[in-house]
Length: 362
Image (cartoon, rainbow, N blue to C red; front, top):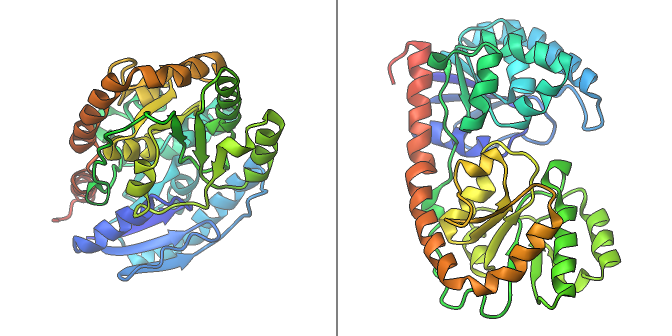
């Protein structure tokens, strides 16, 4: 099977492309965003960048449409069995404008949930999604909106990419929370939807009430402003900013922390959450549909309403008193990750559906 993947700069495509190569797929990758070329043996890359990060939404639409029109002759000459696009609003738009069929779209979350809030976004999504022969939402809470936009159930495959469980062993902790609360958030610091300021304010409030809690964050473009906020709140000594991490770093990183925390206002299928569940970090996360597909409040996690600073503070203060419950929860979360988030199993299912859609043997 020959696949052309349209990559809008999504890091998660790397594992998918590697898996395709390992399973004998001829892989071509059309990169439509600067700086995200996937350099791996067996992957043939084409770099067609059409915009920069400061572009307006309208100029992005124009840019992706132009790339799609420009790619028509190229894709017809390449003759892939199927085009697989990521993000309906970018890669999907390129696939639709190319005129090539069949094409499949993986919908990740913001490309549907945020773009559909505008009239022009809804109009584009409706056309792009109706033209796709297969639509892969990574979480179940997106299916009703996809249905409203014209995607029938028989064209949907609801399934997350998952995570590489071979590289993410469960990390038992005999003294979890014995020395206070060490919180870890691995979300990249570059999107307002992750609502990192709420984490900082809750940490400051919990510490003002006697908690010795600490927080480790990842890295990203907003790090300087978040460091400034931590200083204003007087918690700069309790907050550590990381320099990014790889999957190989995660088991040790999780082992150094008690709790995975996320205050995201919206999500698709959070890879960061799956990684935490696999490694044994207890989830303290916002109560949003994406998280509720994996977690039940007071059963295998603690949930708080998005933006609810007081509720998050109270959970931070409560954590040291719930150690027995937390240990039971992290054990069950690992089993859940193995059942629903096994990347090898999920990607094999995806490849089978792509082959079926393309009417080729695989």
